[in-house]
Amino acid sequence: MNTLGIDIGGTGIKGAPVDLENGKLLHERHRIDTPKPSTPDAVADVVKSIIEHFGGGDRVGITFPGVVKDGVTRSAANVDKGWVGFDASKHFVKKLGLPVMVVNDADAAGVAEVHFGAGRGVDGVVIMVTLGTGIGSALFLNRQLVPNTELGHIEIRGKDSEKRASERVREQKELSWKRWGGNVGEYLGKLDALFSPDLFIIGGGVCKKLDKFLPFLKKHTNVPIAPAQLLNDAGIVGAALLARHLTN
Image 1 (cartoon, helix red, strand yellow):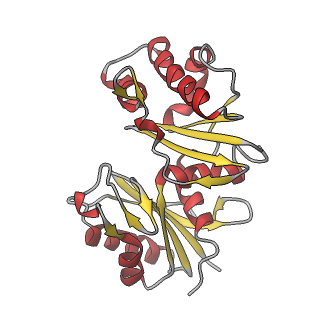
Image 2 (cartoon, one colour):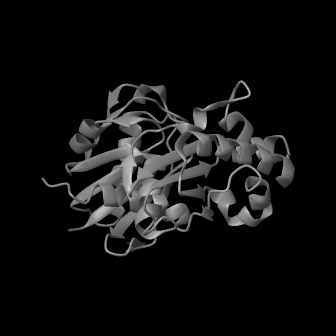
């Protein structure tokens, strides 16, 4: 079976066929800019182009930047508001003619990390936090996903956590690694108090620089902290994994 993963983002849509045994991409991922406006029809056309680029497939997992419940997109971060309350799964099936699984983007990245990356073989509670434009999250208990947690919106000092600790905030406010790391550490400390996790996984592009701010995180929590390993492929791999049991 040829399973593809497609990762929809606010600026780009990328995808590739995935080897579900080892979590590797079978071909170099193909990327197309996210259309403007990013309506369901326009995005579905891009997804179809990416699938056709690889000669088609048998089934596809698609990530979405928002809450996804039973294939319906309940929120829409950085894409057209026409997605809110929209039956995305049904729409993609109709457009693509394939079995489709639509999932939250942070959940997909977390699934990839738990199966093939930093969370592989870790029992108990694992929380993946992606630091980017906002803060995405994925929560696992014994490697089973608890979907759509949206923990980036937990309030700290009267603000959404992502308005204090996202990578975008660090860049916009030109915060030092110490100052920003303290904000992220305070956020992880809050998650520690709420969930008592066994591992934190830090995702997003900034995870490659974890050594610059890790000491400031450890002042707020004793939970082990690991950088994500699959980086930009995580959403594609996780989406494909979640779609692996789909049949016509």
